[in-house]
Every structure is written in C-alpha cells, then in structure tokens.
Length: 402
Image 1: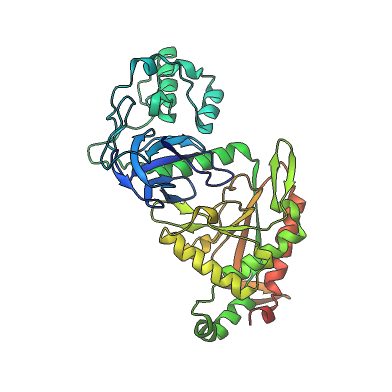
Image 2 (image 1 turned 135 degrees about the horizontal axis):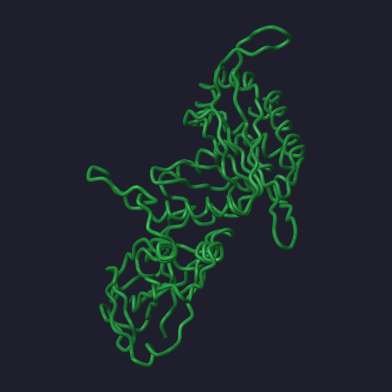
C-alpha cells in the first residue's frame, strides 16, 4: 500500500510550505531517512527525509507550489521494484508542468480546493468569490498571483483604462529577479502581521558604557576560556528574559479565546541571511546561565547561516530580539513575529556626548526599539518593560558572567 508523504508542521504560526525541489524523481528508489524533498517557509528551508524505504510512486505537489500543513505531497510504494512507475494513477514528474492524464473516473470526480490564508484574506478584502477565479496552482488551486490578476482585470473592466500604468513597466536595462519561496513567505508573513496586530513602536535610550568597558577588559580572557567573542547580544537577551518574567503580557499572544500568557520564555533571535531572514529560538532563556546562553546564541546563529537549523529550533518562540545594530542601524521599527505580542530591536552601540549631572561626558549609548501589539499591551506597560530592561543593562551584575 502506498505510503503518504505529508507536509509537516513547521511551527505554530506556519500554515503552509512551498515545495522547492524534489530530490528524487518518480521511479527512483529511496532509503529510509534519505532526503526526499526541500521545503521552504518564511522561517526555515529544510529537507524532509523519507519515513520509509521504497520507490517514489507519485508526486502530488509540484516544485514551486505551496501546500497546507498535513497535505499529501507524494506517495512512496514499498512494494514497487526499482525504477517502476505505477499505472492507472496520475503522475507528476519532477519537471514543472509535466503531468500524465488521469483516469476518466478521476477527472469526473468533484474536487474542493484548499486556499492559503493569504489568498482567503485577500479575497475577503476585495470581495472576490474564489469559485470565479481560474486557478493555475497544483490541481487547479487558486494562487495569490491568480487572485491578484483577477482583481486587476476586474478593475480594468470596471473603470476606464488609465493613461499611465499603475505600476512602472520594466525598461530595457532593468533586471527582473525571481522571487524565492523564502522571500515570498517572508513578504506574506510581514503583511499578515501588519494586518493582524495593532503595531506601536516605543524607543528608549540605554547607556551601555559599563557593559562596553567590561567587554573591552575581559575580551581576550573570555575568548580564551570559551572560544567565543563576547558581544552585546547575550547581555541584552539576559536582560530581556528577566524583563519578560517581570512583565508577562509582553510574553503573550492575542487569540479569539483570550490572551494567552506564555509560561515558557522562548526568545527568537533574528539572523540575517543572504536571501532573507530566519529566527531560531533560544528555549527557556530565563533559566540559562550567562555562559550557556552565550554559547547557544553563537551556535544558533552559526548554524542558521549555514542552513543547518532543524524544524524544532524555529518554532514556539514567545518573543523576538533583532540585533540590527550589528549591521550599523541606529533605530528601527521591527514587525512583530506572529502570534507573538512584541519584538525588540537593538540599535548600534556608539560613543557620543551626553549630559550627566549637568556635565557633558562621553558614553556608549544605544536605542532599544520595542514594537508591540496595542490590542493587549498599552504604552505604560510597554514603557515599564523597557525601563526594566534598561535598568538591568545599566546596572548589569557582571558576577554572573564569570
């Protein structure tokens, strides 16, 4: 009996994944735990291994197509000989658009297409009946591009043609770059987050002079002891973890059932990649020693850049820290990672003159930029959290570092 290859659950906020590459073609044999298909989401690119040994008998979802969590991607037959292709069933080859004819009985069977959350939301926003839209996705599914084309055509039909195009057409010297599955997924998640949460950003200034001096004095010893460069990030994550325990609404989610206040403090760390962004999660950050936290932060970031992060390491985050200061940014307004309630951006630490006790002195200063969901967090509560984080950083207990 053919074994189903299922789209796995890759995070509580992830509803679908995109098939990037089939690593086997129909008729190929595959060993148990051998990589079968590469899947992309807005959080991670991962190769899914085969759960059984056998022959890839049928591919259901083509490369470049999205499918919901739990959908059947393919079938593996444990009884077929090497290179055999089963008869009497539709087969989608590895190359896009090549599909064998299905039996007449199957063709006559009614089908109900699944629609992604982004498509459903866009259809609701524009008042579109999806049964009227011709789908070009897998098995006739309506893609976001299909829906946007339908909306654009309807607008052209209902209104006189504008003399100037709504979007500038590419000139001969312009380049058109393909949009990767990861970039598409990030774009959809960012738009969904902006539409879902009532974003507000507050910015507090923090004096990092004491931490900066400690880093300079103990840099060589810490590197010799651990093999790790001592950066500002672990100090900030430690302070944030303490602040989340003191102000639990920052570590919550707004749902239809009510506000879920998370007991676990799992801090996601935004890591920039060439093609996008990934957010591996540091679990139970409040329970870790400073040294353990620093080692795990370094390890997660390195493996994220090398694309060696596992599925389990990119979901169940309850709060996110984005160290955009490492890239030179002073101030930013980060977008919340759904379904979290807030995200903190750390700006670049720079030396500049400030006034202390009516005297001008040189201090190492930075900005803490907190974006939060105003549906459950008010400004006073957000300020109290930021003040707590700032006070922890300015009066950091360096005895816990050694």
